[in-house]
Length: 398
Image (cartoon, rainbow, N blue to C red; front, side, top):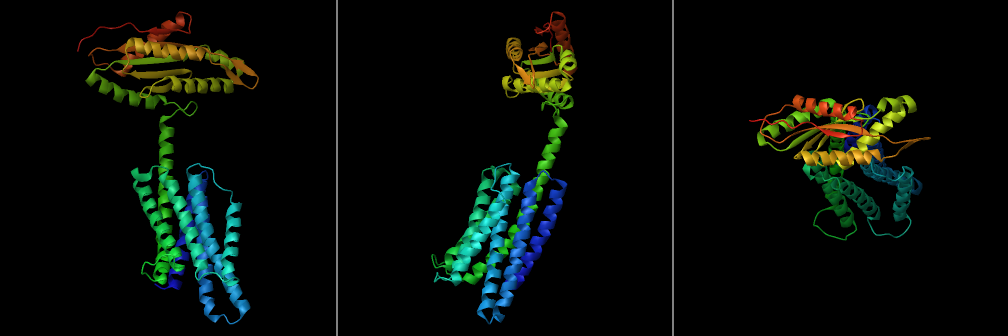
């Protein structure tokens, strides 16, 4: 393909990508990275159009004023292409919830690039100065985008691995083009071939980036929906259904390997009184504070979920009866000393707990453990609350 055909294809492809990205962003407004990539596609599309228009008009330029106008048109197109790559980098930063430069800097940088590239027509600068500037800056932003992805440990993802390969190729091609055009290196390749390769890379890069970004967004949405399905929306702990499912799996494993196992039910003391006295928003805060504290006390591998209302349930793996009691007592002690502050309200709270434990070879089911823990909890509440009670040990045989 010649330059003009490649530019036309580039314009068309980027416009299609922009529409696809805008449609995806419109359905997922919180993903502003998608909006950034759509704007980037529009910038690169318009930039390619202006460059193609200037390339078409150049042979007909007969006056100095016309030549200056066409040159300005061409450099504006180049600057818009650079702005597009700037926006791609910003979009990646936003996608991964990282800080990014304000959009105004994209405009300022683009204006600066037009000013710099126009100097080739004013001062006696090396041949290819303009192409060098454009190529090196695009290579820089492609490299920065590649760096952002590499920071996310992308090698375990096929989609992100494809993006990194494409960005590496893009950065390399544009850098080689820039260094070759000013004679810094000589690869024995015609500059025109590198120019065609860079335009071809732009087409491939646009398709790859757009498809990959939409796939990554869909993956994030899927993960978010999965999280909503298993997490309690208020406390962020496992919801009742998810806790039961995971516990059943772990209990099935335990019945094969006979490891120590403990289950604890916790009930926040006088929670209804907190709601009635301070209001439900304060009650919700108490629940969230307790969940946050519990996560700091429990070990990796322990399951923690909201059983219902002000009740929570904990599955302690590989724990003797004494270890399970020690962990829950540590949590109870820390919770009783926790001060909850909201607006003009300051309060403390306690909880009661019941623990059921198994260490023999009998095959237990979850219902049995819950029943024993619930009976122990009932005893803790009857004995004055703010206590941890162990369910009686049952001696069984396989």
